[in-house]
Amino acid sequence: MRSEPAGLAPARQQEILRRALAAKLVRVKDLASDFGVHEMTVRRDLETLAEQGMLERVHGGARLRERMSEELSHQLRAARNTEAKARIARAALALVEDGDTVALDASTTALALARILHARKVAAIVSGLDAAEELAQSGVPFELVGGTFNARARSFVGVLFAEAMARLHPDKVFFSAKGFAAEAGFTDPHLPEVGAKQALLGSGGMNIALLDASKFGRRALATIVPAGEIDVLVTDGVPPEEVRSALAAADIRLIVADAA
Image (cartoon, rainbow, N blue to C red; front, side, top):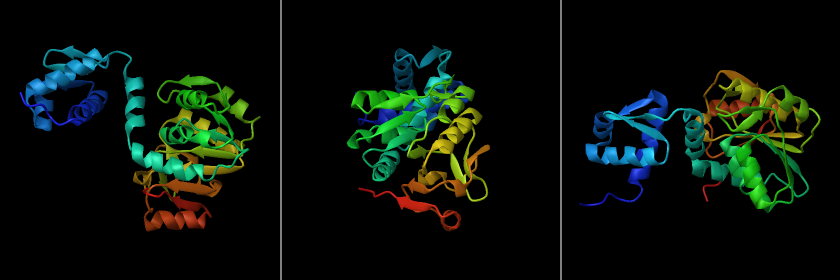
């Protein structure tokens, strides 16, 4: 039997997980039709995902295992736009100077910066477990600020987090958002994360947004911060004219990351 090209199966399996997260139940027949592959191929994908503990096989298809939704949502979010996030992180690193104390939110874009932060002699403040693990492995000294655990983002939020941040004063705060629109500012749909991001931004000397270009013009449920309270925006693509005008009106420095 002829094997398929390397990389196709993992990509297809990730899409199956996305669909299972949205619909809870996925069916072999539907997946085979959508992907243009034989049903046996889909069954092998489902068996692989079941062996990894992601899915549970049922008659005619599969469904997410109990309590997998939060973890899977985080994994898929971390895997999205990885190259764009890496480019943004490299550009953001140029803003960090030896001796700085930098604060990172629990976004996957800030996590990309955490992975290369060891290139500077700095200390860090983080709210997310993933960033803490990266910094621990690379030897960057850091404070993990606690509070109520938010499983969706593997982060800490809430009153205790806000109270702790009120006593800390990092030189630079790096954060991301689900969208930026001129009239709404930087927004996010998850209210606990909005509060945590606001606490971080209220503590810092320089506030730096890390936003991939797909988020321009989007508006989520709640405003994290209006444009006027941000100093720098780092992105991977030139924003549309409306967004550039809003950034200029708010005196935000715009940095577009190199493709290299």
